[in-house]
Length: 111
Image (cartoon, rainbow, N blue to C red; front, side, top):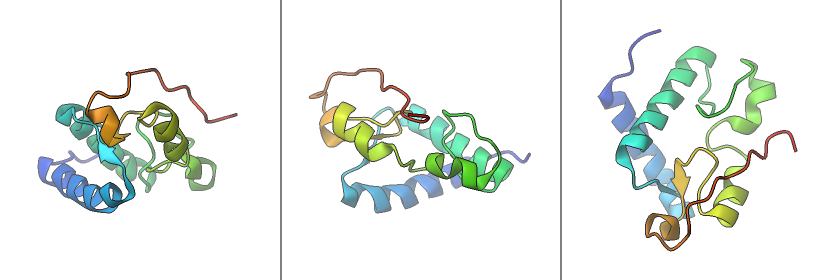
C-alpha cells in the first residue's frame, strides 16, 4: 500500500469541508485527530476501493459496508444527539465551542 501524502490529506480535508460545513457538519477542532482520521479514510479507499470509516471494521464488501462509507448513515443521528459522530470526525458547531459535553457515542451499527 502506498504512503498517503500530506497533500492528499489536505485536499480531502478541503473537499469535505466545502461540502459538509454548509450542511452544519464541522470537523473536530482537534486538527491532528482530524488529519489522522482523514488519512485513515484515504488508506481505506486504497485498501477497499471506498472510504469507509476508519473507526469501524470493514467487511471489504461495498454492499455490506455501505452504511459506514463516510459520512456514514449514523452521523446525522449521532451529531443531533451527542454533538459528534461515532468517530469524532464530524461535530456540531456547539460541540467545537464546548457547549455540549463530551460523551462516548454508542455504536449504532447492528441495532
